[in-house]
Image 1 (cartoon, rainbow, N blue to C red):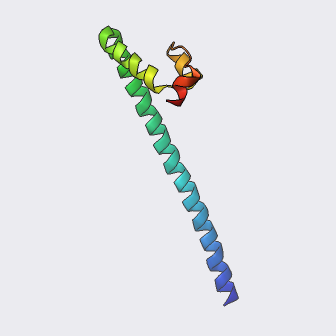
Image 2: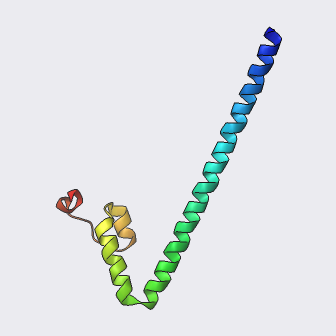
Image 3: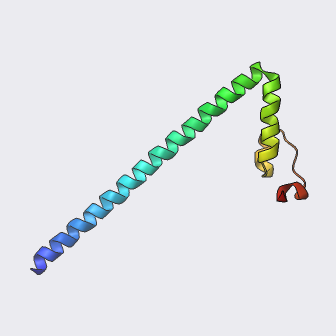
Length: 88
């Protein structure tokens, strides 16, 4: 009986490792797909914005409203926010 128990525990350990690896693979694939979607959406928005300056100003207004971190704002040429603005 103890040999059977040890064999089952070893099998469980192998299965748990396989499950962990597969979970990581699935998560990594989902993250890569999500990142790719964001890149494609951004490319379409930028392309459309070049063709439609009025629409691009609306996008800039959204970015100005929703981006708070200085590094993120700098990517779009937005000025840093006042400390009072960040708490709102």
